[in-house]
Amino acid sequence: MEKLFRFLVTGLAMSSMMTLQAENVPDAFHNRGQWEEMSISYVNVHIGLEAPFSVLHISDTHLTEAYPDESENKRAISKDRTATFGGLQADALARSLNWADRYCDFVVHTGDMIDYQSEANYDLVKKYSGENRILCVGNHEFSPEMWLSEIPESKTEQYKSYTRDEIDRVYKIDSKFQSRVVNGVNFVAIDNVYGTVTPAQVELFDKELAKGLPIVLCMHVPFFSDDMWRANVKYWARGGAKFRDAGIPQPSGDYLAQQSDKTTKEFISRLKNETFLKAILAGHIHFSYQERFSPTANQYVAGPNFLYTGTEILFD
Ligand SMILES: [Fe+2]
Image 1 (cartoon, rainbow, N blue to C red):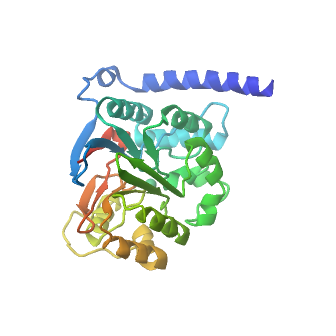
Image 2 (tube, rainbow, N blue to C red):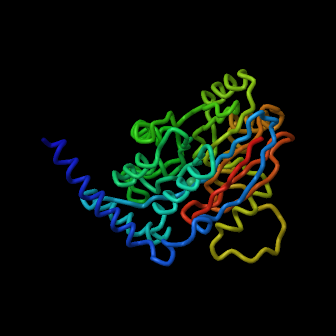
Image 3 (cartoon, rainbow, N blue to C red):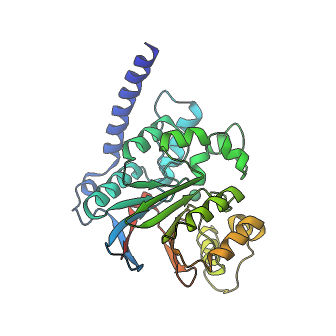
């Protein structure tokens, strides 16, 4: 009975949420043409495949829903963060996946599909999960209530462990480590949402290497280079100056973690010589960025999906 009641309440809340979202999309914008729905860029990854295919790479949708019967904190955060991201994120995700269904063979989402944990966000994740999708976690997947969370966020494995099972259940993934072979290419997705990887992940990665297939590494936080770090600091330093100094800003946060965590540092330097590695897909920084990572692989960082951004990656 309680289950039925919960189902009915959720159903009602879901339908009012859907109305709300539809109302959020201005008519002139909602009715735009089919090629005008997305901001797409194209890249090519040459592997020497017999059968070419394409992947839509999206990242950082930052869904900000909460049902009326969810906690006061979640509703307050929903209001605040919907204003931050514009309120069209669910539409952006729906259109991205529709685009992928029409024009691509596979979708890789490199994390932060949700902005924080809520039943309403989870229902959208479930609605848009599917067979031909690889979903990575981002740092926001592990946030119960952002700055209002009972336990303040600490960038540790332990902090993620409090809600990992819940996320894995909703996303139907093993968020720490996934591998999926698509047309002979091994897509390996790892949780590196605070910049670092664990010895257990490295061990599993080595097992994937032993399969001898080309590998595409999918994860939330890019492997920063000095150049990418400089761009990141320039973008995120609110009130920062115009570009006048070409010096590399002092590493902090994720970049410092990648330089100081022994396991991660060694993993990155070993990957640079790994010829099976053909591409790295990441997100997190909210701007599009591409650069050479190693002799065999480029790193592609997708722009923000909350602004209808996606990258079609053509593998041949
Ligand atoms: Fe992120």
